[in-house]
Length: 93
Image 1: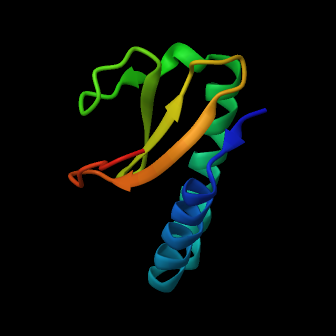
Image 2 (image 1 turned 60 degrees about the vertical axis):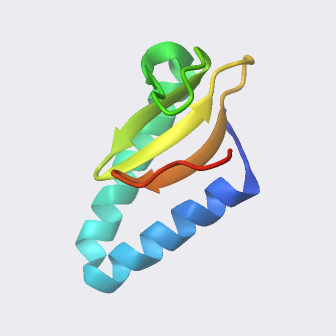
Image 3 (image 1 turned 180 degrees about the vertical axis):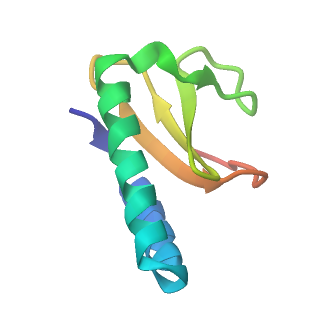
């Protein structure tokens, strides 16, 4: 199980909608990748790399296509913080 910030859920909805406008199969493939990464984060919260923008050991990220899925591994239940296109600054989490 993972927990979500509301803004991160909205990031996923917005990204899926954008990809769906381009191609249904691309959107579905991306969602499948996301679900696999979420399963891995749930099992192995420390697996992601430390986010260079913050340099805090428990703020981690994994890549889902061309997006950075940023999460906190500070507690037993990882918290999904944001989904950001690669190359975009994270800003305040």
